[in-house]
Amino acid sequence: MLSDPDSLLIESERLQSVFQQLPLTVSVTVINAILTAAVLAPATASGVLMGWVAVVLVLAAVRLWLRRVFFRRAPAGAAIRRWSRVSVLGALATGLLWGVGLVAMFPAAETTQLFVAFVIGGMCAGATTVNAAHFPTAAAFILPASLPLTVGLLTERSPSHFVSALMVVIFAVSLCLTCLRSHRAFGQCLRLHQALKRQRLKLSQANQQLRAEMAERRTIEATLHQAQKMEAIGHLTGGLAHDFNNLLQVIVGNLNLIRRLSGDNGKVVRYAEAAEQAAQRGAELTGSLLAYARRQSLRTERVDVNQLLAEFEPLLHRTLGATVGFRIRRDTPVPACMADPAHFQSAILNLAINARDAMPDGGTLTITTGAATLAAEDLIGNPDASPGWFVSVAVSDTGTGMTPEVLAQVFEPFFTTKEAGKGSGLGLSQVYGFARQSGGHLRLASVPGEGTTATIFLPVVAAPDAPPEAEAAGDGSAVA
Image 1 (spheres, rainbow, N blue to C red):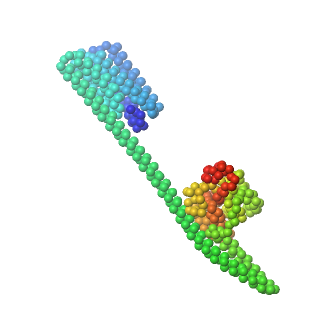
Image 2: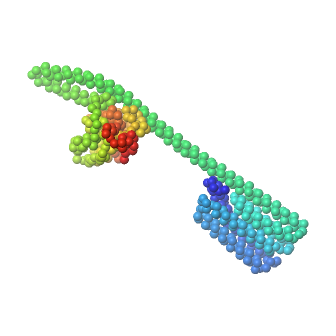
Image 3: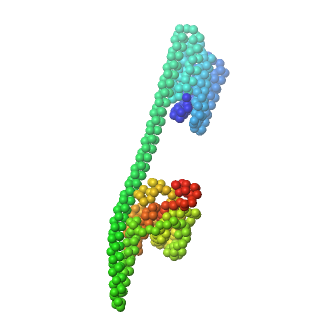
């Protein structure tokens, strides 16, 4: 009967309604008991009346104490059934005390009998009002209180008493039916309230999910838009850099001819050498642009990133200077990956220089190697990489960090936040192009005032004689 959560909750609400009204119920019971004893005193032994009133008072105190325990414990679940029985037993004991007690002291005078019937009727009507939410409790009082009165009236064996007994029965049945309707209406109201609450919860959850999906869609759209913009810039940059590089080769070739044909004219030689140096710097610039456009020439081979970092760790120390703390955390063993060693070291050096410049007052630079699995959603906007297992090299600093607005533009060629003449804006672009051209990925995370972490992901290449465990890990298993 009370197995589903809604039924238990409704029963709990019904009992709370009954116990909340209990002080009023008990007060009326005690007052009526005292008044009734006063009316019956001339025709009833005082000892019997005093004993009856004492029992009424004790029962009232017990019911009030049980009310206090109920609200202190706040029962739930199976305990609700026990407290429902407690409520019914309390009402039953009170009803029997009034019904059986008054019939045992039933007066001979018809006027007094009418008074007793009036008191019991009023008590039953009051029980219907205060216990309307819980039919078992109301019926447990009404029936034991009214039926003994009916028996007492019938024992008088007169037509008027017979009609009075019939009226008491009709009145008690009417009260029970009224209370039953109130009991059901109370339950239906609570069920509708619970159904409405669940629907509101579902609606709230659906709204939250919709907002999350909309936010995710906006993020994906922004990522794709950024990727398309970067791709367009890359195509334009690559074409210009390639054509400009061809022009530079012609210029450098002609400068070599001028220098050889100038003979002993030192002035011409100096001018030619100066022009050739400028042309070489232009060639380096176009090389950086080609790296961003993923059109540089890479000599990929199987490499161990830990070994490559160890080889040029002294260079990194000298580059960072004395104000920047430096450490490398190597995850050993790190799987082999395919990369161009020289361009890899150049990318790490670019990241280290950017990190150093972001810590003008000193700080800590940490390079961490490891392995990670990237899923398709991690590579949105990067068609050059495929989901799978990657070697990761993270370069973290404790510098000034970047705002989201700056973070959205850092990979664009010539974008820089440094002062004029202190940065070309091609360092991160070159790293970006190297990672993409290597079939990998570059992830940048930054918090203003806390620092930046740039992570290069390079695809793992399983060794031909790799054991089955290594191959399984390379198929996408998580690596700690």
